Length: 466
Image (cartoon, rainbow, N blue to C red; front, top):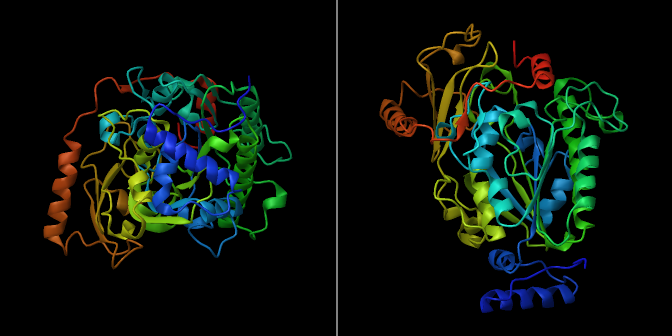
């Protein structure tokens, strides 16, 4: 028998009461959005809602409408923001997808999972978000198009189905592409949703690469000419793809019990710190990413000013699903911040670490950075490993270089205070040293993986491999 409505747990009297109150709210025709301090309670009243995680590769927060209202690049995300939650300051754990998504899916710092080389991947003993949800009874489906997340690197762990479509697959999109376009991704996601078991909760992970490739069909190319215009057009195109995924989810058997999240693995630089692109450093400009949540009920618009991290997403989804969070997870659930109401601004910023290991490009830095309070400290590795392609075209990539920024006075990180603020530099360096002394958790990283030849050819075409 198909279950076409919301399901609630009734064994706990408190949860049953919450379920009853939500049911009354639904019967009232959703006349009012749920207040901020009621959101966490409303979520606990759901019985294992569907969870949809949409990752837009290479998406800067400040190029989307919820973070820059003057831009019209993301009307779909603007609608989410008007009825959901926007985390205003979110940091990725790397500017390279493989490191960043390893942290995202395992809720471990880069130094803890140790996945930082082209031949590294997640070992079988790694504990991923998908594995935990699958073991709790969720159907776990993924469709993604980034070569560094291919099955050969272990990112398929925990997924009942993990599709990696090759070819452009761009219905109505003729622009050249290394990876499948958004139309193909949406099509496969819709197919998975249509074939799902409606009696099981679903975890769906969707990963778009169009923004990474600055690719969009002609009807979305109305931001002028040049590289930045192409980037904005790609954002507008993927926002429309997100809209289509959301419609497909909400039209499904459990569409009124679905939590949707849009995130990104890293941003993109347009000249900041003297570089273009990403995977060159781990300064803030390439770590600032969006995080927008949409619940199966409208809420009073919530904006969380506290700085959080991508590795906080997995424990949040687990909490919503009622699944225990492993002790080894470094991330912390975001739900308490959602519920803080007027006290949200008083919540302390969460410290964050980011890392970039083996340099993939000649102008890249082997760099680690730490954000604590308003201070940002970054340090390049003192030596360069044999075989590195570095030629130090950018002084910011020089071995051993140190950087200290006070984002209260210098949000653009233009003035390096490492020499002027020696005491603060020493304090931050000590914090970073303590973190780097932690060796990777045993069994999380697999080394020397043979990259699938078809994937290697595409990565080579993008300049990642030589």
